[in-house]
Image 1: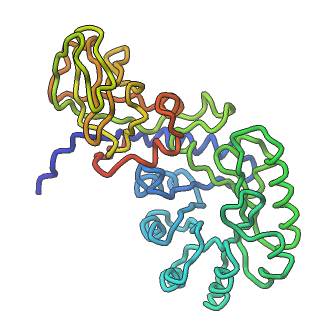
Image 2 (image 1 turned 45 degrees about the horizontal axis):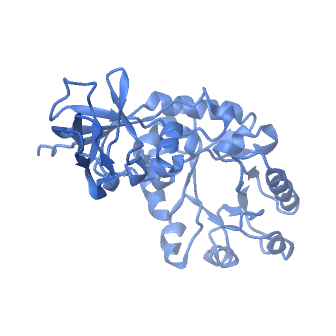
Image 3 (image 1 turned 30 degrees about the horizontal axis):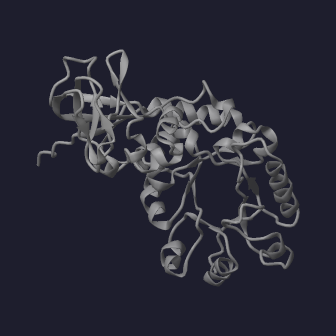
Length: 348
């Protein structure tokens, strides 16, 4: 059966992905460097991502849910997989039949795992100040974890992208708890945490954003390569005159005659309204600005500098993550994870 035409595509650079992981692994020093591949590998596609990283030597992967674990396990060989959200009652049948490890976050999750009598290792998350997920130091002091076979004791930095005292406090809090928990490994750092240096690496790091082209801190500038290129097909080319308006709520009024290309792209595809009158597309050797408000399925760009562009041609959006974040007011994480299902993903 012929594949339907896709007017949107993501060009994904597998070499850049692996290069980013290798740089992060080098920055992790003696610690093993894993990979967070939750949310379909931050939107780029978990299947292809884990195959490439496993081939490059990654031996520790992280997802959020057991449904994500099922999608990833067939492609990572003998590498380990941890499920960060632990296990709800509804997860038990799947979890007990899986070789993935739950990351236990609550007393009830610990109780479920004990009662399952698996005899397998688990991971544990300790809250050191983020107040999101994890057991407290008091839980550990009460003996909640006594007797568990714990592979990795995790915590998560709240402010690793900033130079603040909280980073050091969280590190010390994890060390204090680890003295009472006989885990094989300690893990604290995400992408930004890796950039904080060797004191934060411990035994295992868990990069996510930087794998996919995000720059979490200044130390990564010039080292992290762009992985994702967003391309959209032109639905229509049109000319507007001085005084004409563009898009919903007429947020742009032309101050001159202008050539527009209407792209088959909108906020339903993760090109969100923050790019309205602020995003841009690559036009030859320069850029054409987004004009008017981004709508659900369509976006207008000015193509005065590209008289050759016509209906059916392809245009690449400026999706360098730090720049696109500045244009849109969105985080680099949001830019990646909102990329929709209508893109054809093409790996090189």
